[in-house]
Image (cartoon, rainbow, N blue to C red; front, side, top):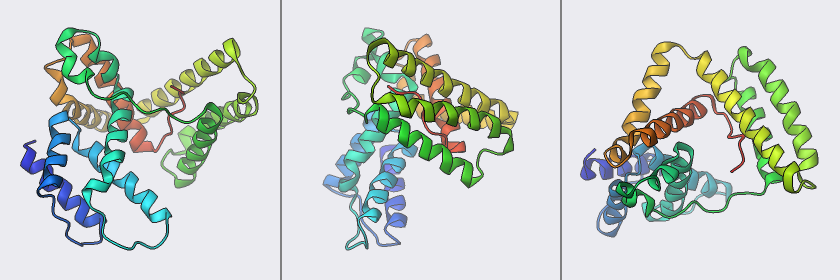
Length: 238
């Protein structure tokens, strides 16, 4: 996507989020958004960052003024960091000297504590089930995962050392099991569509990545899209 087209798409989306109020992406704002494009921030990731800002803005009460794109910068970069971590791009960037441009991006910010993470996972899993996005095929798996998470929440505050590491490993295993279950529930056409979308997201980085790094990043990008489709939480704690 050309930088000008990227900026137009951001401007159009920002207009919709502002209930039709036109906020131009020009001057310093254009430079800011063009910087996202240059860094390789996928357009969907930038839009997700804008959504995150607006969600927080709405929680503060009635809106008082239209939102400028500059206000969304921190959230866009946060979501980009999360996407790079989910796809393994940060790790892949350090795998060879050819990837220095990717590895120079800032490291992700510190996340929530383990107990807070578990509480948020349970809430999101409950919301996804209530929304009906998972279907009956997920019911048994969700019940078992929810049971394990409830037990983990009860123990998490007092866990240290090896016991804490075992819990984190268990969360990673549950996360992988849920993603594999979701992938298996998709038809071939849907699966291939997500694969193409993941490849499009990674296109700006592909030339600078070794083949094994790209393969890992591609799988991570597909996982993220599966989460998005089914509104699945990230159970793994990193």
